[in-house]
Length: 163
Image 1 (cartoon, helix red, strand yellow):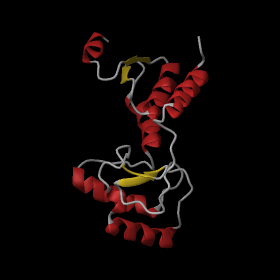
Image 2 (cartoon, rainbow, N blue to C red):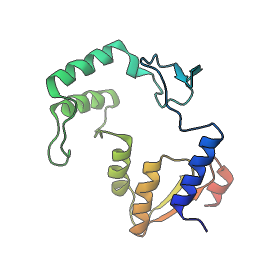
Image 3 (cartoon, rainbow, N blue to C red):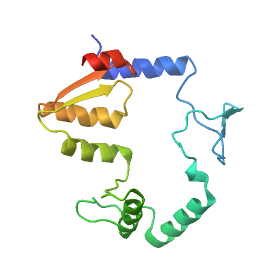
Image 4 (cartoon, rainbow, N blue to C red):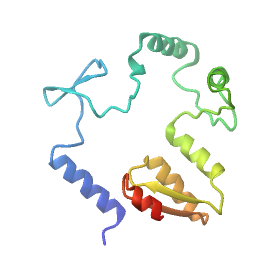
């Protein structure tokens, strides 16, 4: 049986050889919709920008202003010290949802922080095979602590019911 690294390498190599992955854009400017790959103008259906906010002029101007005031990052664990901007942002998000809020700097860090808090030793984690890699990674760590973890085929509701 192949080890995980060999399997991942085989899958990525196969995708690259079939022309369905490992591309690099050639654009010097992004409009959020069209990208250039190997000289071809293409509609970008692979973006994770669900709202397209990275191109909103108000947000870009705000980001530029924040970088000028605070730099490009505040390199410190939030457990130890938090940047001033988090307090303001969490306060605004708290007003929107009328509930307590804690924000993380990325989806992955959020999963790694929250899953060990909300999942107890008598709980189970049942994941879709296509769930975000950081959820899978956090779940594997929970499995090492004795939590039952299993994966179901993508969108297979019958298998989910059985589990």
